[in-house]
Image 1 (cartoon, rainbow, N blue to C red):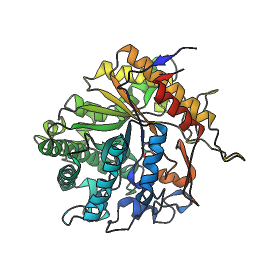
Image 2 (image 1 turned 30 degrees about the vertical axis):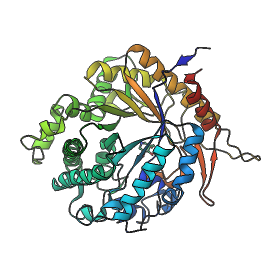
Image 3 (image 1 turned 135 degrees about the vertical axis):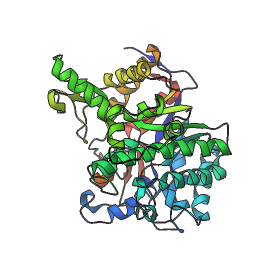
Image 4 (image 1 turned 60 degrees about the horizontal axis):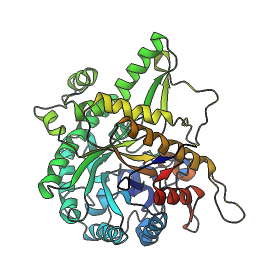
Length: 439
Ligand code: IFM
């Protein structure tokens, strides 16, 4: 059995997002978000589930911090809900919303847990959507104002700031296939949105640094390795194209200062989204890159995603392929000049069973985590500067269009009683964090 050891300063964390756990969707002055509107629209989310209550974290945050302590987390990655602090997205501030995050941050720090704060994990104020949402350039500037407000209040205590979680998912699921809020299906809109998200990112990094020059600013990208289904040249070409078209867009503009040519052509051809100076604004120097990675794409000719006979799949239908994480990290490291990396999400949904004794023996999740963390250790040995790992997710929660049907948590949430129970994976993670070793 090989032992993989991590240094004591390696950051072990868990992640969540506001809409997925907070609930309290219209309490204490919070404004409506696009996800409130979307989930309240019949037929958009499985079983018409909503985030109205979710894990009730808005009221149970103390209990949740106690769980984090019990697991021994060094860090907690969470997002703040823009409409909770600016109900209409701009203008009037909701002091109760700011107070909530203030208390949460203080509670984390008291527990010795480093907050990693994300400004945008998909819950745009609905009022801004009505003015054009991310398809409107103005939204990028309003986002920077929101970032400035948040950092003014929390920047003295929160060191790690992330602008966006997974811009690709915002553009593609929200505006291309319409599976996520705001449910738009239009390719030109999706590319325009992609550019405005990047612009908003650059502007927000400037706003953050203007207020707190020593904070650590970054962005979180969804990155899955792309492998060719076979060695034949057509499959290899298809896999290369797939990587360029789906995985590399944000890396290119953030770290090489330009969009891949095909995107630039699209943006300019009738959608004059890119204005002079935008690329320089986007290319702000970053202190870290967050990588969310769960699986890989196996691509065959014509860009088809191929199933992998004999492979294990999670409840999301995602292949379990841990070595792909190491290969991905090496590829990113070789192709881009990157700041230090944090794995900001990795984890798996499986169908958990509560045993007669009330325990959840989630062997498959535990094994998934073990395998992936081992690959992170190997990538570090290869020379990739990975500084931390966040499991997705701390709690079972609202899995977007799947509602509550998919459970990613290392802590089970009983949605009827809101009771939390540490699964075996959480106990295992606690031991791993305590020892700094994975076997
Ligand atoms: O639940 C999501 C999260 O909000 C963003 N990254 C992927 C997770 C699992 O689908």
